[in-house]
Image (cartoon, rainbow, N blue to C red; front, top):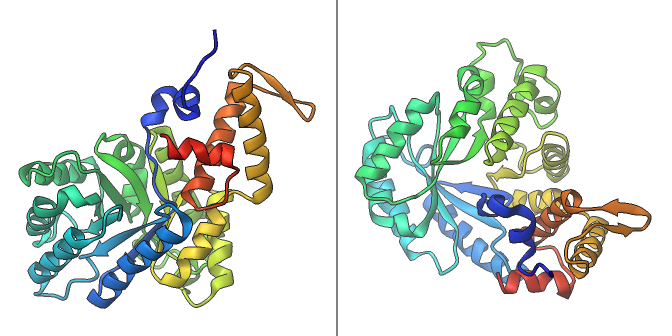
Length: 330
């Protein structure tokens, strides 16, 4: 009997309900930059035919001391006014900050229906996640997901437990705070675009976070590259994060970093071509095993190649009409 349906449902089954996020998460906290970020998102959505990056409006680093309440009101206004199809999130203050409860009450309480998630910085344990979840419940924010920022050695140690919490959708790595937390044991070069991929303690932390996410079906999001004017360094770091460390998403802190991240996390054209050919042949065979260029393929490899197609779509890469049609009907 022929098996019909969408490849995502057929090949991934229960995993089809898993997290699908853009590969780039762009942060801005100053009003003019937040507005420009939202405008850029709309322009690039039009260009690529898909929303290829999230915009996270930043309260933690964006709000002036003493002006936390006004800043929370501003990001709430911006989120509510964002265009249809926009993907907007907010980074609030840590759970132990005096402004945390007010951030959640204002932002999640008023704009939860327009937000993709709330980012919680400086999460140390599952208890912090539970506290954030309780605040969301008190704000009647519904099932709004939490993203968490892992920034200390102790938090890295607990990454698997944090990733297992049902409300958590993604874990990010906070490079600079992680290095600082070592009291000088990691040299300042460990925060550079090159050193963060060579110092053993930093690499180990990154791998722990990525592994924890993949163990629980969550999205690992790679840290910033502070040398935002160095496009080559940005592109190299993004490619290593994607190809060597298992990250499927990365932070941007400057508009110039968005396209290099998209390019680095996107499949190569030849990979898209191969994946498209295999998925098309598999569909014609009703997902039974096939031989393609002398290599056997079955559902195990079909799952991999379908995920290549999905990643190509989410990074705005051109797809053959036969593959693009899957995203127009699902």
